[in-house]
Image (cartoon, rainbow, N blue to C red; front, side):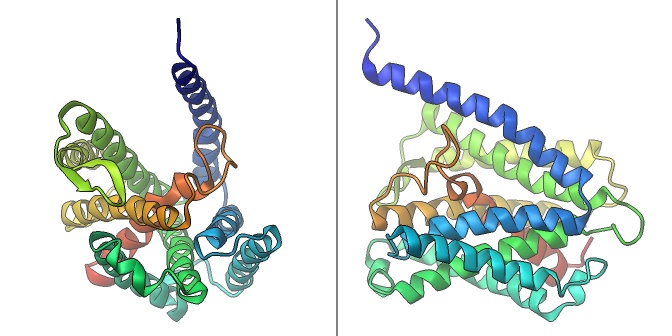
Length: 296
């Protein structure tokens, strides 16, 4: 006789597969077929939903408070996008500042995760501080998505930026899948037991291996003509920071007493549950390539 928990797991897997089959083609179509400005509106919608979910991490539990928070995120980014020159985003000082802010924030986030729950004493009682954490998570994510998407666009290569976005997403998904598989098979040493008991150092190593394979395949078979000379170094850093993107959201969820950021995506939880790693990986990849190293 099949247990109730087994039935729930099978139903959850079914929902996850159906949702993935629907969402993955939509994401690819948006990245490759939409012009940057139109793509930006899609990203802003995602960021608004992420802001709505983040409100509960900040301690804003009321439905109205959460809606207002999400609307403010979306409206602020929409107003900003209207001022941006999509042909030269990196010339905008605010874009550069947001990417630098991401690089600083994710170093701080790593320290917060490593020292949790002691680190929670610094922020758990402040709505303002937790909202600021949301701003430096979500706004640079928008900047990174747009900066990567617009690469090569003004010069006539309309797909170059989409390929770079796909590369970062493949890195993250490969690392996540590899970590899950290696963790299930070999996992013994907990990585951050007080934040996410299921993550192991063996899983992290497996994620790096699978992400490395994806990076090698991409560098040899992608249609891009030139690759950054520091791509391997940047990719390793991005994979590591993406893990902490996941752990950072787990830390805030644990402190807030919630399992999923919402139930917007059947079988997957909320928007933040799907993009938590990307909120770290995308702006850090863009910041390292364009601000720290030699660019594309």
